[in-house]
Image (cartoon, rainbow, N blue to C red; front, side, top):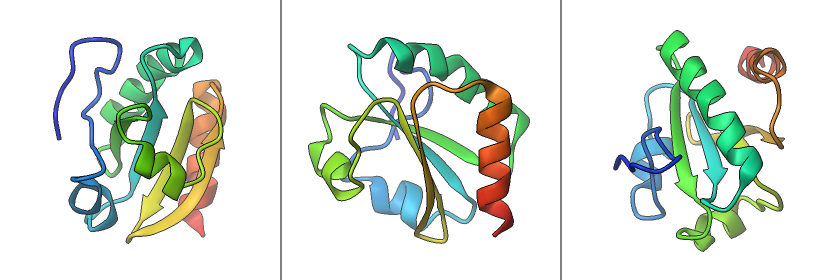
Amino acid sequence: MTQRNDHMNLPETSTAAFEADVLTSDKPVLVDFTADWCGPCRMVTPVLKQIAEERPDLRVLQVDADANPELTLRYRVMGLPSMALFRGGELLTVLVGAQPKSRLLSSLEAALAR
C-alpha cells in the first residue's frame, strides 16, 4: 500500500498488491475505485475516511482506476466512484456513485450481515 498526497488520501492498493491487500485480508475491505479527474470521487473520500476511522473492523483502500485498468476491467467498474466490498476474497457488493454516509453505512451493514 502507498499513500498519495493529492485527493487520494486513503491508503492505496494496486493491481500488483490487490491479492495481498484485499483478497487475502483477514477483515472485510472496502475498495474505492477513483481517479484524479473525478469530482464526485473527491466528495466521497472524506466520508470514506470517516468510515475507516470509525470502523476498525473494516479496511478502506483506494485504487486509481486510470493507473490500474486491469482491476477496473476485472471488477467491471463502469462509473466512478465505485466502491467494492470484499470479505474472504469474495466480492459482496458494489456501490456506484457518491452517496451520503448514512446510505453507505447501511449498504455496507446489509452486505456484511449476509
